[in-house]
Image 1 (tube, protein in one colour):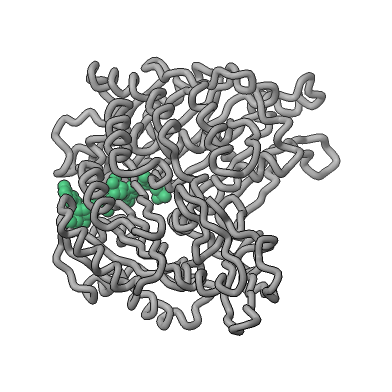
Image 2 (tube, helix red, strand yellow):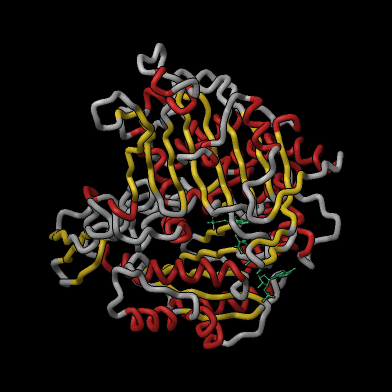
Length: 570
Ligand code: NDP
Ligand code: BG6
């Protein structure tokens, strides 16, 4: 893979910088080069991928083969002669409408897509181009801070969106798609991205058809694969094996959208760019780490999918475990994707296999509050009666390495709880021989520091410290050093899918899951999942809108921990 760098530019080019994008990406500059002979202007993309490398919007990277750095004035024509075609497979579905098309539009709106690009929707539903445009236009939104020309931009974007109706297993249909793509690509070097926004049972059919009949002949071809990547170690390995019959690992981008969230991205910055945190980041100072996910709504509308997976597969084995790996990894050699993924996989492989004794499962039951009734999980018509699928789980995980030996990593994830949120809580040890311990009475828990990274909503990082209450008496309380994103950074935070789509277009793999990471993640959870199913473990019922099953408190207490999100001053 080659990235054209500034120093590789031919000396015959004159160069000018513009800071058009500084407002959105600090430190990034747009490089415009004028070829003296033809006076032709091309742009060196101002974009930054998530590892901070300059991105070449016109794609100077290529899978598997070295792209020669062009010499002399031809460089301009080569850059503008590339194009990217993005095909959203499953375009009629929920995720495509809710997340993928809006993210593509947001990238276009902020000038982050290459100059030449086309978006295709592919699904079985019979739609015309205009019908697709009409459907997706309803979910496109403009950035609050840049409202001007929004409808013009939206119209321009929609004119680049097309639709092709086809069967997922039909190579003939993908061949027809290929013809349409070629027509739009107009003989340019075509790079193609397929987004599999479809149920997992048809992943392989689509990959077979699209890779055989609609791969790019000159440029790269990549596939973004949505979760779930299997149900356990065996099915996941089988999926990987089947995908690799048609694709190389470099072509597969396994998405975990939590890795695209701003505060998850910031985890490494917080750790590795601040002297104050990294020395404390170990069993010597950290008592426990909590990874908490909660939603204040049930599985409404997705019960059919959910019942086959349950909360452990839906949230813990991927979203929370990925955060844990980033949180706990050693310093990577560099910010390159392979260096980071190597460190993450080491953490996952050092983790203890999860045992049933260290897990609590729950399921929400119906509840009436203020005259309003909320359904039970099993009231969903797409959920089988008597289903034992957990909608809540709490677990205690351990990393058996030198840094984290004995530190409980507590996870908690649930649907239909009292609030929506995702956060990381780091509870520090007590201050040894604390001079002020009497000021806290007997509750020493209140005297420990806690670092909270609130992933959503209302993104924030805050540190609970002990502080003297102003006045003549010596009274202490717990206060927050608070970095509230909405106050410090009033600009709207991009959706995770925007970052991930941009990275996939740029071939930046850092935020995508490598197959060995996936194997290691399943190895931690698969035996437990099998045991839960074989023993038909009955989940503890909790009312819709509550704080979840009481069992979660007992599990935490077993490790001398209190859930930070449920304390008075959370
Ligand atoms: P949908 O169930 O809406 O399916 C997407 C499209 O696939 C449908 O519009 C339909 O298109 C086609 N399809 C659905 N069922 C079948 C089937 N049994 N056989 C063949 N085609 C079918 O899925 P979502 O959009 O909700 O999700 C897409 C993927 O993303 C899934 O893998 C899901 O697990 C994952 N995901 C979804 C999230 C969400 O919030 N929705 C969140 C995270 C991941 P047509 O009939 O027109 O061919
Ligand atoms: C998905 C799960 O991966 O993440 C859903 O399948 C869940 O069940 C969703 O609702 C949560 O994502 P977010 O970004 O809304 O927190």
